[in-house]
Image (tube, rainbow, N blue to C red; front, side):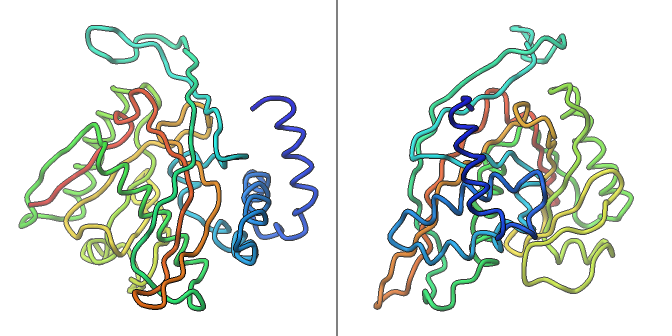
Length: 274
């Protein structure tokens, strides 16, 4: 981000800060930018939903959320240098990359009435988009037998995939997992709440996130870096709109940019129980 952009972001924050009291401190400027973006479109009334959408948004815990200031932005990130023969990091020297990001409008399902759209629905739709992208780009896949599944076996499988992620990235082992609430119930690590996406206490050394639409026989394993430029997947929201359709039902329109960084697939793994 350039100096002029940073100054502009600070002024945007000052404008919206009174509505950001429930937002975690390190995310307040990001959410202020999104509120400012929302106030400039044909449905500015959705701006009041923005703080509620991002107050407990799981995406902040698993990927890099970098809001776009305009419909086109430049994304910067860094990576450790790799051995050209094996594509594995071999030293702590970092290389910087940049990429142009363009906001693309995506129509989401299911279709609902505009008057019934809630912040939690929008947050779940956004998280589903992130998780689908990661699932389609995992660098490690392990299969295991569903018939013999146990808490100890799942721990071992997660540890195995986590170790592979560490060897491929040198960023430490995986620190989060995603699964279906029903699967988590089978492992006796959750309550019976299966209606929405939410976070559980750690399962071993990984934070656990539950998603009702996630497959019942899979676990997604990922590594999130608190050093933002070292993250693997970048989700760049711009604004949200509603497409009104009296015949088929209204749809949420997400206008976002996103990017899986060079080598980003190595930061994610999937365990499939068959």
